[in-house]
Length: 180
Image (cartoon, rainbow, N blue to C red; front, side):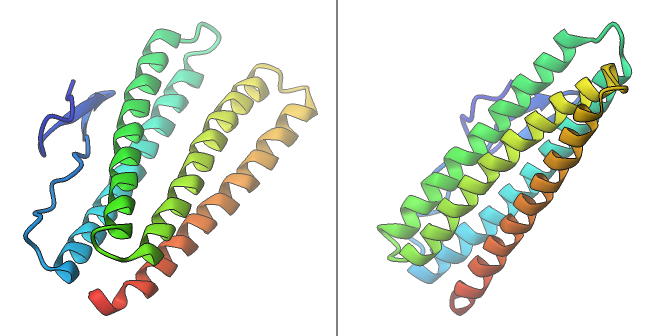
């Protein structure tokens, strides 16, 4: 299990290793434009890591549901723990990046996009957890229409949140074009 002790740090998520972001790896000697570009490139990498972590979480949840009625909860709990560690590391690095964009780099506009991104990513994670619980309830009690309705509502909210994340990333790209 990685501890974030260097650029190569990682955690095991299921059978895979997921990189744990390490704050402060961007060289301090870079020009402001170069530093901003490096941070934005790292953000793209982090968003890719988030997407992969979500994929692993969804894959693990499907496996968990397929183990019904004697759910393999210990394995799923371990996956959730590992995913939480990975998401926490990514969030810390993005918030650190926002701080660097705001203060030393003088780009509070870009920092604000990262803060908004983090809020929406937190919302996405909460909705994902709620959706997983709702799917389990719907599977266990298929005759209860309220469970199916909750799954549909949560899927809709999750789609809207993902769209909002995409819009924030587009705004960030647009506002950062002069440094690209």
